[in-house]
Image 1 (cartoon, helix red, strand yellow):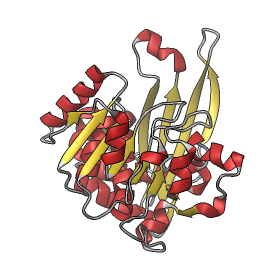
Image 2 (cartoon, rainbow, N blue to C red):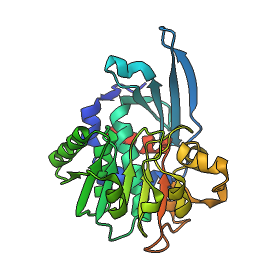
Image 3 (cartoon, helix red, strand yellow):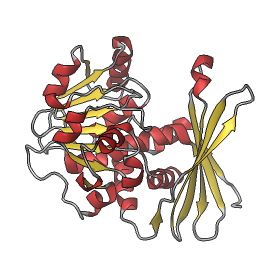
Image 4 (tube, rainbow, N blue to C red):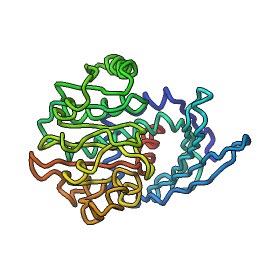
Length: 314
């Protein structure tokens, strides 16, 4: 163990993960020699009250540099207790000798690295002259997604849509405090039709984005869904788009792709590239200004590694 392991709370994590540096760190780790992201493990854990919770472990490392593991709990009934359903912490170790470097809050780290990774993809998939950004969702990820995307493109118009206009206004206020002007969308379909980039950060089980409305050149960023039952886009969105994922293994497990795959509307061959292939240049990304692109994110542990290295300054 190191002499003085460090601990960083959520405010520290937010301060230590500015968008340009975090985006750059994720890009670097994606193509770094010795970077590995093993499969996560998931355990069912009784909560003592007759219900099942979940405990996830997501490891990742850069050989000879650092080893990180994110531990995540999912207690689905926490909403009734006014507590977050997902909680996380990240442990960081030396990849040279295995000594413990420290721990940090995983919730703030996860929201920021998730948004930043989608911005990494958008750098390669959104049109260069994108001017209109639409954020769909009002949770913790919504302002993060807007700020991260705003770090890779300059948007003249930023709109936020949510089922609750009050919550959407709250996101707009949060963005204003960060220096990003935005407004509440009162007409989802009209905003979808006008947007150059749409980022979805919801827990919806029914499609929200109608693919028929996507204009030529639009980029659709799907962050929220992570189970086969969850879905933010419809079949038209998938069939009209060039499809990209962060990883082929996990990206196809969410309903946005799992359901069209099961129905035979698309096949695995229709997935153009993953995030590593985009960052490395193995795939050129967008091919034309009229191509519609879709990026499905599920989360990669290497994003946690990149963010943790930045937090701890190693």
